[in-house]
Length: 150
Image (cartoon, rainbow, N blue to C red; front, side, top):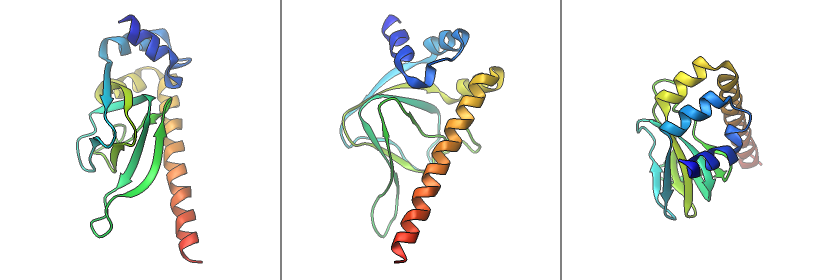
C-alpha cells in the first residue's frame, strides 16, 4: 500500500487531487507492467481502465488494414493513456502498444467516472486533460494532411 501511495503521489495526474480521492484510488489501483511490443488494448475493446504511465513509452496507433498500424502519438512517463474510458460507449478508439518496457498504474474506469462526478475539481482536471489529448491529435492530423498535400 505504501508503494502505491508513493507512486500515486509522484504521478503528475494526482498532484493537487483531494486526499479523499487519493485514498479511494489506493483501494482501487493496481500496478501493471508491459513488455516491449506488448499490446495494451485494441480499438473496439471495452475501455475498462485508466492507465497512469509511470515509466516507459506507449505508442497509440490506428489500425489500417492496407498499411498496418499508423502511429498517432506517444504517451510517456507521467502521462495518462487514453480517454475512451470517459466517453460512451466506453470503447477504445485506437490501439495501444508498449514501445518500451512500461510500468503503469491502472484504475477502474467506472470508479474514475464516479469520482469525476463527485469531485468537480477532479472532473475538471480530467476534462481539460482529455480536451488537450483530442486537440493535440487533431492538430497533428491536420498538419500531416497539409504536409501530404505539398
